[in-house]
Image (tube, rainbow, N blue to C red):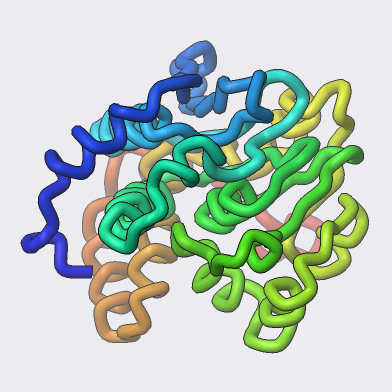
Length: 279
């Protein structure tokens, strides 16, 4: 996408005409390296308004400058994650140039979210439909609540995926499985999401965040510099150029090798496989 020819200030001004709801950057667990992005528009099942799209950009920009961050969790208030785009906004944005603005904004911001040097986890709870399912696709991991209804229902509305989630679903699941979900508009249960490889785990609808923290614990015990470096390597690899990824690994190795955290771990003489004598 050629960002140089896109007037994002103009798009922002347009989006702010559609008020309602908010996306909040919750810093309660900031000191532990965990941020929470909360979708809060419960009267509309957390549907995304134009104003919320601007909120999301502001939150992502703050996360981009957070150098000690390990993980960001996306979740919704009121018992579900996100039911898609606000239908009232959609009705008032029924022209190609307006659709282009909405699509460009969300693809750009969600790509930036995906490229953060921290782990991203989406808790898909309750109705996670259309744009809500698309947003989840930009996260490294998806956990689904036992009451989730998850689906790419765009076809029923006479449209296709608009925020980049279609491309990400194909990337994750492959051509035929993704096409099946697009064409059938099937609503998936939690168990089906896990079976298809969309989600990692089912969490309790009564304790989504608590279950997610328990699951996440084994992914976050490394120093933030290590976690962020591995995520940077993974991000680089997605661009498809193996030489760029190898160069990224070399550069990060030169930064971490012999660093403070490396020296601390070496001094502990850690035995990784003590039972068979391997270090």
